[in-house]
Image (cartoon, rainbow, N blue to C red; front, side):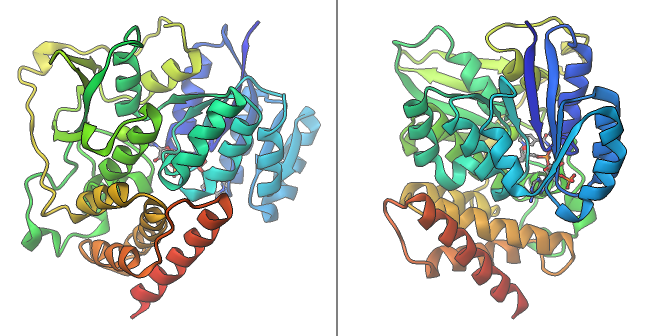
Length: 384
Ligand code: NDP
Ligand code: MG
């Protein structure tokens, strides 16, 4: 029996790479569901090629176009966020790849978990916003959460066979992004085009800006906390510019395990979709002659304030990571539209963390409200 896969966010960077994986591994995977937000043309092309049973376009204004193109192929077409949630809550698939970007991915990911399904999680914002609720629902519903983020996939792989052994700490590696080694006097003038040039990874725009500002690593600290049940002080970040060591786990005897590979998301995507098996593929391999030295250096929390702010939000806990995430989504969008400077992004996030009231144990409703409040506040602060 082939594994039936739903790809949420199929038109994005992770989504399109997941389709490459499925194409190569068509003897084990069967594509059942594809979803996109508004890129109707690419969604239609993907559906024509892969012939899923169901396609969802969340932007309802694009429904007619997609439906006209795909109904002759007997593909069921739905529109709107409600459909994303309903299908995630159905039995039409075995594993759902959560590759929608940002807070927008939360509701469908939670619906899949509530449904007791296996979720291959790329959408880290889900765990940043509501990690406590998500992980307790995973346990309660018997769902499975498999990391796709390369660092977390590395940690997950390092932990295999170590169930009874204690972790001392995990070490998340960060490439350092395009501005590694730069200081505030340089960053103050940085523009979108430069920030979008990541040295090692090709990714969607939002996560690429997060990587340049190191917010991505901050979000990943929070993601790791929830995925692996860690205490804040067990999570460390180290800069590793070659992006070959994807992350490490240090056990109580001082032994360090690392997982390595080329910086290619197809590997962690395939691993999560095929788990627990490892499947042969034709992806490029690491050639150590091309990497004569693997280097490591401490992360600059002072210059890259987003990293410090994320750590602070993680330590405060409650609704603070949700505030951080929402404010960050707004400032990244504004930065991408050239409406604010690179360093100003941290000012707005910091103000949101200071101004929004702390809630120690938020409900899902609280998280929803807090997301809106933080977005509104961040938006108003940018306009000033
Ligand atoms: P992209 O921006 O490339 O793709 C995002 C996908 O989500 C697209 O299919 C997009 O549809 C869809 N989408 C956007 N907004 C909405 C919405 N409001 N409702 C429903 N669907 C929406 O992002 P990435 O692929 O780079 O990242 C996806 C997730 O994976 C993020 O959470 C990111 O942090 C995480 N991740 C990504 C990595 C990477 O290498 N790219 C690595 C590790 C984690 P449309 O195209 O129609 O707009
Ligand atoms: Mg990552």
